[in-house]
Length: 201
Image (cartoon, rainbow, N blue to C red; front, side):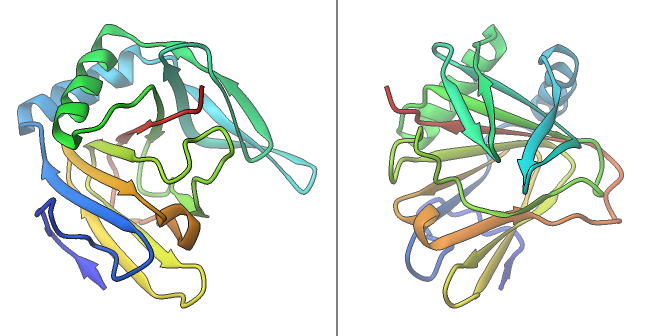
């Protein structure tokens, strides 16, 4: 099931076992362009790393990890230590918190240079995250499809994430659903994704 523009934040996109809400664009087109450019230039991007079956893998996709304090965050057997918020990220966090009616103490940023860079099926169930907490995902740049797959039924749900949009995953979503950013040959522009998270402690 693919939702093109289901921008009603009161509608749960998942049929069961979780909560996903798509708010659509919460920034104007002009703001989205400016934030995409500024984040691309000013964030301390690094290629993401993972250790899978003993192999050290470095991705083309770049990431950055910012927070209230130097939280450690481990996924794919690699640990990152958070940098402190930039002023721009503080502004974005405030907008997201006001819209989501929630608070966040950290943000994992992803930079996808083009459509051939994506993210495989996974769930964000790391022990450092608040269990059943909220993850708020903001997109700037290229529009990309974002997909969910139920861990038992394999039922899928997808949504097109617009530039300047907000998507929230909450409740038991990470327990029961995987998500991914599928690669595509149709997209030739970068996308920056900010995932505001709730860390323990």
